[in-house]
Length: 130
Image (cartoon, helix red, strand yellow):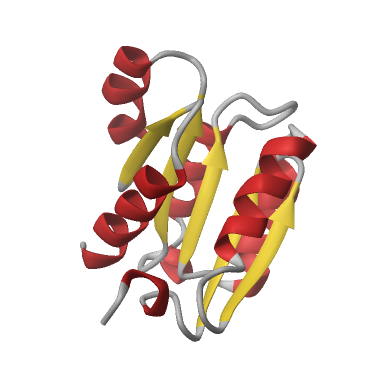
């Protein structure tokens, strides 16, 4: 199985209030085969979509208006219907803080902005293999 095939027939939710980052991540994920991509621009919308669509993977920005990515991650972890959903936290708050904080909220992986798409692919593979 190649990296691009690993998301085949899976649903991925990308949530970021920065439209440029949202667009970049979404366009990159479209290079995967047969992936369904959902988008949200804030935490409340992300959680609503996650509960409705039951994505396999959620890529969450930490700092969003209203509900933060960490709060969304915690709500996903507390929702039994989303038990198998994997979460990658994507943030520019600083590597050390992200490393310490994201696992506390139940994130499977984290990645600091700016990032390389190869690193995102690696985090996706790691999260999905857990």
